[in-house]
Image (tube, rainbow, N blue to C red; front, side, top):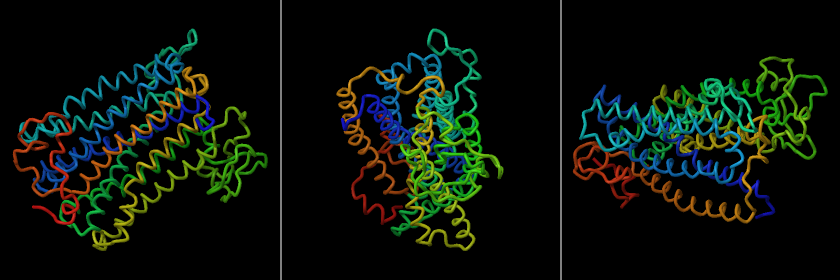
Length: 479
């Protein structure tokens, strides 16, 4: 297929399925905590706007949660089908970590999800709020175990190699490996930011269409407070993560910076833009700022950053991909900080909900958090190459013995099925978003779903209402 080898196709397939999957857990993590905050504020203040928003976003959460579970199962199976050599080598570490995720996080979420989605009028407010909080905690625990497994592949420790297989000897060292704390904080914060801008873009869309009510305003207000407070924190966490990566994966940093040579003995410049050429071993058309690379990465004006030429060719990541994926992530992060600061200025001026340029910025930044997560994931995973377990096992040694024809067929099948099924799911979720929150939706109506009396048949019953007259529902608020 397109002149690719089976290894390349296996990598494409895993990258494709993970890229699809990572979108859903990111929104699930953020929305679960958002729902817990909304319900807590409603219990404390009894302001109807928080209850209305809870019921609205719980429907979107239900659809997103379902798609995340399905896409995650497909991804997990690939460890055995396409990467059996890796599973044989490192399964004694990664297998238990993923099992812990199921036994703790998934069972916790599954146990309380039904009460959260359908128990509003069937259990007391305290138990319902407890269920929402448990689901939110479950998403964080899931993040904990998934990141522990992936971080161990980045910075492995706490093991011995016996008969060609990894054997864990210190589980605390395995779990709390050197990169794990930074990656956990970075990913969790990214999920909160991605959700904040998803919520903010939804509110901006309604305001730009002329639908202005307290629920829509509250959505935008809460999203922008999150952006203002958390986006700078994320930049700080990213800086700490970069220092950790410089220590443990210097080749990845060199690829991110497009930095090839330290022969001049000078401080490392920061290359803003350019095109790293792996064949010519140089970054072409570069625009750089002297000393700034050393200042950012080593916090000094004289220390040098490791250069790609210091590593053998076979140990260098693809700098072209890593260089640009990192800059996309950083650029979007800067736009998020800008949006947060702009929102604060508009609050002070009293025009945050009327400024159309600001609302358009929020609308355009709606997918920015998810794009930044994907860009960060490409930076992390491509930057780890050519290793699947850093320094221990190369990716070429981890793949299963499949033919090009087999990998081509499964890759095409995955692409078609994913775009059809998950495309329909995403389209349905966006139609729910376009309908917007409904005032006093929590009142008993006898039609099932969150806050209703009918016993549901499935989790997606949480999105009980039809999609008819969708456009009219956007422009004409209901009461």
